[in-house]
Length: 379
Image (cartoon, rainbow, N blue to C red; front, side, top):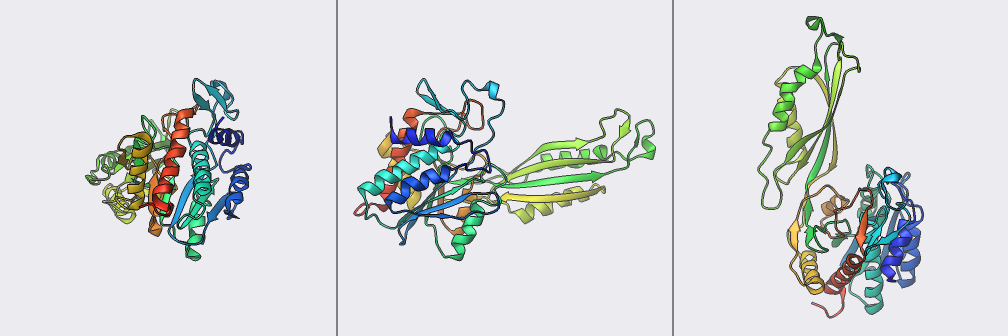
């Protein structure tokens, strides 16, 4: 059985539901310290963060990942226990198999093979792990980046092992992500009896036309790298549960996934301008999950394209779709950032899985990227 598969099975057995790590980072340290990596823990609050680095010179290549997983959901829906890695029909099943312990196992064994073959490699290699990616991500990579910036440790290239692939390993790499801006809007009215609407003020009714305008707003037209910005309502809560009471307030949560044509301040101003047109009383609270980022060109993309061509024999596609990732915290430092990992079809679902063949292919791609960028004598 392969080293990558064995490592992945060991990681899946740890029930590291966010923000818990439960010893996953200790497993990585035990393996990599033997190869000259320095293991540093940069923990904040209840979040476990790990910075493993080999070398002190530039350029610095970083593999970025997270050891936490989402909850398994209803256990009776799984065909095998979610934290008991199980092989069926060439697939390894278990929570985190694809998101993203599979990526972690693949890049750790890739690093092991590369360093063994190239002990005097150029620059430095680091692995950055957090247990706070699937949650609100307030004490994870964002905090580690602050420490690295204070120490002037500059990341040149960052590969995030998130599940980016679509139909086959390596067919898609993420070269950027949209920004994510969340809002909680509370509209105030006057509670009353439904039979006497003239004595009340229904906030749902007053909100409705404004909400319609917000959802129909053309925020931008996107660009060559990103689709147009979209606003989506995620939750509406109002009323007491009784059939005969006009509610006193209604709360709406919405999110904008925005491209590089917009910024946070512009979105906020345009939203408030729409709401103010309707003259109702409201409170609006915002939370920026991340700004958009883009790596449109550079050595990292070139090395990745070449590695996928070498290992898989086809040309990959650059893409900026999907949700957010911790790459959003690395990109503002000036680093080139891409995401390349397992197929994303089963992530966050019951019976999450990864193909055994894909696992080995991914590890080989990662190793070839290191060769392309850091092997002595390699262009």
